Length: 147
Image 1 (cartoon, one colour):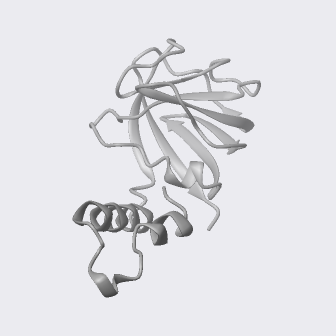
Image 2 (tube, rainbow, N blue to C red):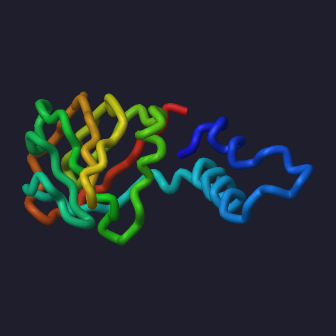
């Protein structure tokens, strides 16, 4: 996302009509993205792979209270783009991973780190309930916003 100063720099005083279509499109797209941060729940498959493919997630320490990194594919299991906007803007209080009879509740401690097709999200686990899901088990990821 662009800062306000970056957006305004694309829109100089328009008395001479010098706003390019590309600059206007960039401003409108960024404003739209900021207003539509996406949904808050996503379907993923649990993975034991620390570099998860599309639709998969894992942590650096499994389903434990010692996990410090959530490895999260940029596309969920239903091919939805994950809304990293809240996390990267510091507006996500936490993430909740849930599956039947189990949950992992974690605070988000910083912005995501782009690893290509997945991102590393720094976390601090608050609570774990239930056993680790099996490889490929469905896990719902819920972003808890602080705004």
